[in-house]
Image (spheres, rainbow over the protein chains, first blue to last red):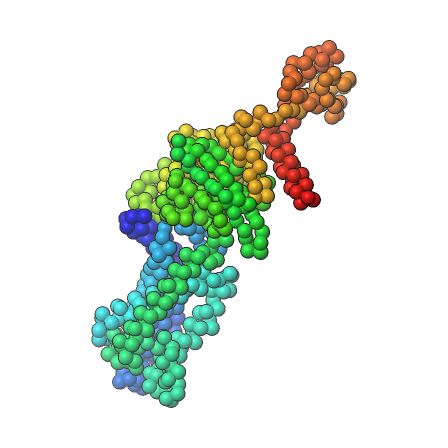
Length: 257
Length: 313
């Protein structure tokens, strides 16, 4: 099919995906704002004031980038996981499967939708954080690149989860048992330099550490990891997860009998 | 004339070893109104699923307007419009959104798609519901929505899998009129249905599939010509005593209903003559069952007998 047909098909999937999470904004956009407000109140104002500085910044300023990134990760993942699984469950995914839409357009459309929600929620959380702390920006390009790559990684992860999922329970297992622990242990609330050497080493295999630290560098100019390594990790994850997602969709796993 | 659809040696074996299609061959001419009939589990939906790439085939070839689904899948898909048996749209989306997005998957610009959505929603009497969620529609409306959706990219072939299942008679007839009209405009239509009357009324050519094998593939007239006997039900004056008609098998069902078997070589006038001689008045007459239904039962029955014989051998 021509590039024009593919472009219109991609736009249609993106429109559908963005329309979906905007239609149910009370479920998709409001909860992250409330959750993050609670984090700011409890960890920032109440407990944070007793912690003092971290990495040369007051605790509230230190955790803001991590909290934004946590929202981006969670929302990118859950958007694609629930949307694609719903499309499978209601069988309206067949609307795309019978059409001359190349598989890469389907993957790009869903990932784009997940990124859109992740980034929009990230913006909302950033606006909420302005009520609690003065946000400084050290390197805007690093912030934008990190948030885009991270939301792409977790959108791809959500898509793979949805392809394998056989029930709605299956799309909450990974976020509960994998994503939440990795995020909480990924340097959102602390600098990994505070950990004993052994646990610092263990943290190096947690990919979220690289994403949170690259993002924090964009805001505060401090990081526990090498930026080049952080972007390399993101790149490797994107290529690997995209390859897996394309293979699954092309083979029709869970989609075609 | 170019074939709209060519299927050769098509086989499908599902996981677990169930052989749904056993090497079927089928061709549908461009512009045809074609019926694919068969009992439940015969392989109709599997065949349609393979053509529309929702089911992976095990072996064989499928070509849509000459485009092989193995090597030119996207071109082949662009000619097809599918109306599946089950409702498969997002129940929470508005009708217009469903239609415009579907057109987009085929590369139709949104401005053009909005015009087409209006055209088909009006033609299928759904325009008043255009801003409602799909879940608010009745069953018949949902079926019409799926027909509108399948037409949004103006396909050359429209495949309908049981399109009038659960639809009331009035609506079914209006859908028949709509399908006849779009067929006149040049769209090839392939229909599966449980309503044999529907196939007889609409379709010019027919294939009957049973247990993954095509047991008949011919035109409707030729098929109906195979029917060598019809049974008529006559509504006669109450309390009439009808003696056995000569040369006809006849039986009284109750005190005012007579059934008569009439062979193709016999004239129905003879039935009326004999009833007149007996002084019996006939108020009305109808076929006992749909003609195609009788043939269908006989063909499927023969296939089962042949199958049983082969198994015994």
